[in-house]
Image 1 (tube, helix red, strand yellow):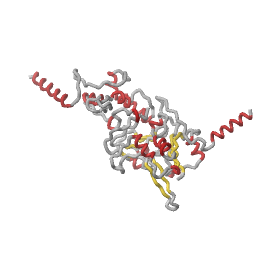
Image 2: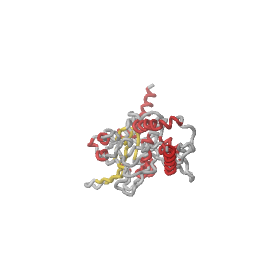
Image 3: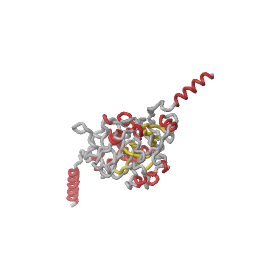
Image 4: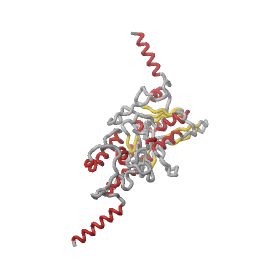
Length: 130
Length: 238
């Protein structure tokens, strides 16, 4: 009886995983595109747990106090974590299977950052900001 | 000794002569980690005698810089600068002037905001903190300059330095992202390059800056000065 229930649950989970369209790695964790440049500002364990705390603090510092060049920056997250598509153009970080969306989908977290913030880095020829 | 003093005096008089320096010196970028300072008061001086009625260089440069795209509804599309044509009915004298957020020292939009989203930075730049904006639009009603816009629908393709989205109010930021990097606002650059060179940007608190010297020596006015909001944008020739 217990084995049958477990089998049904597993089948359901597999169906959900397939249906969601996200790419999953072998160990069941979300498969993330690799970052473009070197090491992140903190180890992955810290970033996974605390990136939103860093960004929450930084956004007020930048906007309300005008402090630029902070360690944490959503602009820098996007610049480093937006993967390039087959046409060489960056893919939005909130597109299915991309860096931000794949993990937030896995953790069932709905974020509001990208209704306002740019999802791709600035194009080099139009980059007019530091 | 006396001779040297005389030379120094002469040099000082020459340096202070009005109109000698019309191009603003490049402001220094603020060091990383340093907050905006109340020692600065960023402002604009607009010479309407040099502003052509059919020139929209500042408006289009602003739209490009800030990534403002039209949804095909000119009445509600976001605008940070608009050209206003005014005429004196008695004399027939006509002026065209760009009107943007006037970055008031006593901003009405900040007074009325129920969430603290409408705010004035230490250096006098008036901004909307869209993390806190609930889209109630009280600030739009309070602003006598009609400077603010509301984003009515989902936006894509925002500029990394100007996040903006549905359900929030937005307005001219005086190009805070450029000022922080030691650059001039996009409209001022475009006016100098493609327009009549009518706009001068600078620090009104710095007595040696070209803008402070000009407002100290020439007649300038602020629109709706009677309201006492003390805008940082001054006009000349109206």
